[in-house]
Image (tube, rainbow, N blue to C red; front, side, top):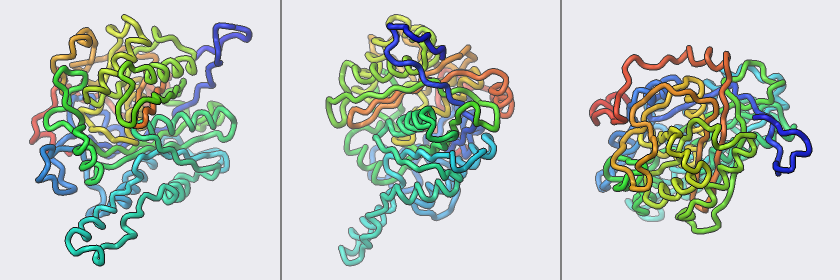
Length: 438
């Protein structure tokens, strides 16, 4: 995060002002707050279990990553708002009150915006025909309702924006928020990112053959796909002089790109993903040699993992064999539009705790990837700067860089200590144990 001197012709874009991360709220299949989600992730536990929210009896993929129940009998939008409110309260409690609500901005990110209430329309339609179905149920993709509710709940009077760019959405929302803060448009940005596990999404990805009937095995030679999951996160970013609390860590930089290649398939050589990572490093004023940890997008699909590996090799060269590479999706599922925010929050917690969570489900890697360090066993690690990747349909790529904070981060870490026992070898707990812990 060193700003180069004026006149340095080797730099095309000056790094942006580092931004303080003062609050993190999380709801995942591992827990209803960031401390529980982190402890269970660090312990090598999995939140993936048989789906109970809707009928999957006809599917060859019965599993997903459902967050613990919060509102009994709630429909999708109500349930999502409850989870988001919970994550928001946690983040804002950490960040403290905004100095000026008029200078507080909301930048929300979601791919589906809890649109799954349309399930009830199709159920009624199939049972009783068109006259028995309420068309209003189909029109539940209303991001403006989320903007109104969240800007009110989070006291964000300085502007409200909605970002939707497939599975890169959450990371893109953080990037937009960072740019707005650096432009002086606001002093604080509250950034919620979310998507929920629902029947339509589940059926769609099953039809694409992107869901794995077995374990999620990132970068493995025999990988067969992902599991979907709930993911709700809220991060609070602030300009350093405006923050009322010390930073937990720093938002150092971001980079985006587009493959311009295919609707659902990545550029096979990873050119767009590499460009996003290079731009993130440039924005942060760092070199690839200074990155100590990378959170992979790692969907465990054949094309995506290979493209991401090739992008990493372009950016890091042979050093990629020495950089610890983590993958959170085998533990929490793929939260689609929420993944970039949820996994950004978990990457920040890696910096805070100086601990590398294990990657679950590892198996024999692709031949060209066998020398990678995918953190099969959780371990302490010296992490000064970390990168988090998020890529999506439409060829959207986003990469974020975070940097550690000293004393304040240590104080925050002391409030969520690591578990006494850490599961080794990157293995998930037995299904009955995982289901009972949800």
